[in-house]
Length: 146
Ligand SMILES: [Zn+2]
Image 1 (spheres, rainbow, N blue to C red):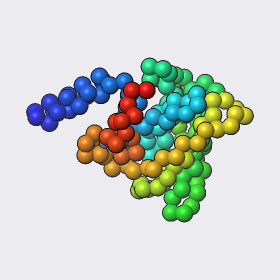
Image 2: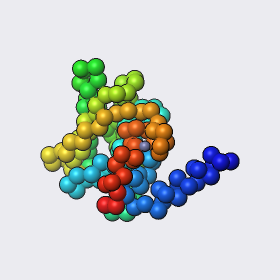
Image 3: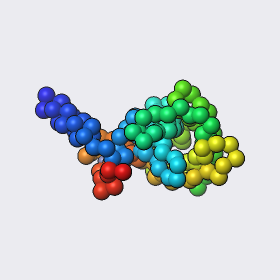
Image 4: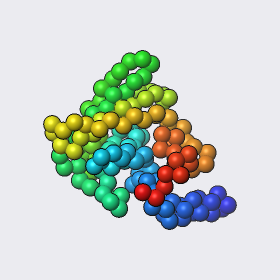
């Protein structure tokens, strides 16, 4: 019960905040120059990218496209993405384990120079916020409110 109450308290905090922590699936928000996307790893270890509007509502994929490079044990693996519902989803799963780097490249349309987002991928849950470490909001709370 106590645990439950703590959870509600944490939820209340998240709902009250308008920071970039408002990711629809509890993933990590990637923001740069006309792009605001949520990076989320699903249970099949596929990367899901959802594109967000000003209120962090999910927008349709439209013409946006993405690719990613996984740098794992000094090997570089390219991931492609295809539209599935409201997300761009990687066509292959991430390598086993974590502690590696993922560079996600997103463009708003074909032919546009993509923006690169570097993510240190750590999958274990954070003790404080219970989110996966790649999406942890604790150490970033000072950036809240944009
Ligand atoms: Zn945390």
